[in-house]
Amino acid sequence: MSTNARFMLKLYVYSIVHLFLDSKVYADTSLKIRIVF
Image 1 (cartoon, rainbow, N blue to C red):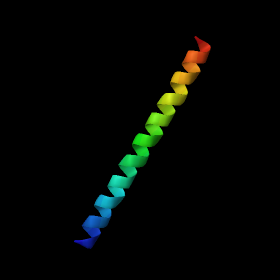
Image 2: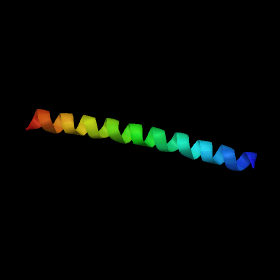
Image 3: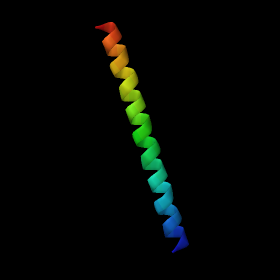
Image 4: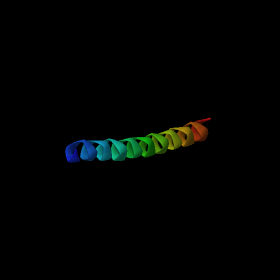
């Protein structure tokens, strides 16, 4: 049970970090595109 909870917690943290990085990359690329055009 504890291992399953730990796995769920790791998955939760990974998804949050992944979303944050995706939004950051999206913001950076949109900013660069805006500067270019």
